[in-house]
Amino acid sequence: FSSPGAKEVYVAGTFNGWDPRKDPFKRYSMDWKAVKYLAPGVYEYRFVVDGIWVDDPSCKNHRPNQYGSENCVLDV
Image (cartoon, rainbow, N blue to C red; front, top):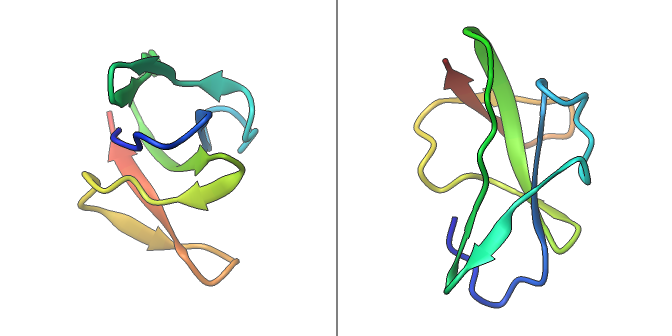
């Protein structure tokens, strides 16, 4: 995930109870990376960048959520 000016990046989704601080990314040069091992299934998620919920720009599948935006969908 590319966000050069970010101070912190997390991923939140159905796999971690939508906890916006549970799964942090680590900075590598100008990008952010994380490794998360998931069992086979379908998951919804969003990134949290400096406290703001954002989309994964590489995600092609989305589902509407109750907040008027969309969650990214990952099929493992």
